[in-house]
Length: 119
Length: 114
Image (cartoon, rainbow over all chains, first blue to last red):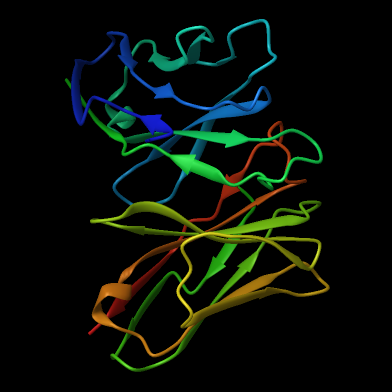
């Protein structure tokens, strides 16, 4: 079974509008972390935001926020006030295991969502 | 700038050859990860080191090997290269291999095998 599912291969948004990128995950580990990364066409992988499984509040970083719904196992990324520079591939990823865990912290990635921002 | 440095950025080599990709983690990070990104396989975890010791192996071929040195930099060695090894190879680092530690990626090394 896929551990990370991103069901939107591509999304379009108008500049200055908000957009939500979907991510669902599957794990039986009570301790895990959820990450979003941005990959522009140049190829680098840019860290955007992190949400821990025990965090009570949804994570926010500037224009990025993570809508964390633990019971639904979803961790959607919300980008507010989209900019042309937001056009990129976006990956959701999960890291299982707390301190002393045997997963050793590797990330499992979804297939990604290509976001295109129109002027 | 993530603070993770990878060299070379681009590499073109012939089938059957061997290449070495180098990675310097962020200052203070003890854990290094290698990932391969290809069009057909997506992002695949290859191998992880923590403070010089191998900690986890993913979908790494036997033709590939890696190590982390005492100064914490890491090298990924790819040998007997095949056309299918053409991919973007990422190094990433974190302070420790716990779920709460952010993992930062380098800019990647583009490998083209011809």
